[in-house]
Image 1 (cartoon, helix red, strand yellow):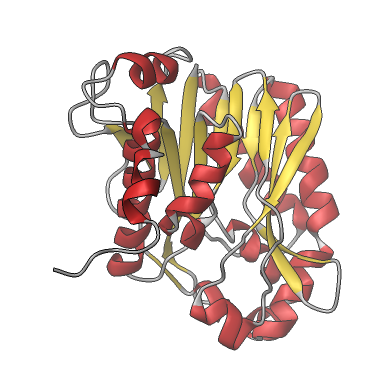
Image 2: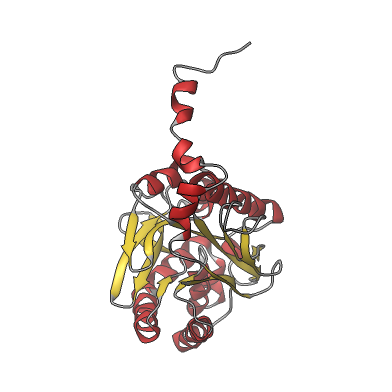
Length: 291
């Protein structure tokens, strides 16, 4: 199969039709290149705040509600595009209000409908201290025609036990949509994603927002490069990088992935991190010796 990770810029729209045209173009370009799985970034949906005008988009709280208001229409659009092109799409994550405060939700669409969603589980300081976006409650794994997929949204990718819980539920591909405003922030997610690919001997797909956004302060600066990672082991690139875009260059990173390659490296790799994971347990309990 072919996987596409988006390095995605945030744009201003005067109407929803502008957003529809942009998403249609992005999905169509990836599909024309043979992509089966398309991954958009965390908070890529915040560009929809522009539909409320500059005053709304510039207000942290009002922007959340404006983007959430357009969530159903954006979801319907992605569902139509997934069906029309016969692809799987992880949509750009968005605030969703199911209580007083929103979660940060990424929805996975397939050719036959919505497969499911993952809410971000561990919030950054900005999300919890300033924006008051609240964490989700559940680790999920999705059974798809492409394999079992887990989603580690941005900061979640930096916590190995979250990814490991997904892998122990059968995940072979982890999707890591991100939104980071500095090279340091991007590097943390990049290093975390590469580490998750190494220790779980799986594929990790990193899709960031890129570039400046002058109308929405929550996402005003965006640094990153899209990439697809695997374990640096037999049958995989020695760097662990299958494909990547240039830093802050909008576009798709695309890579062919053999669906059976994860099972093979977990069985026949030069190292067997996935199998040997549990050997940590008895060495750490009941505590680490100080000598």
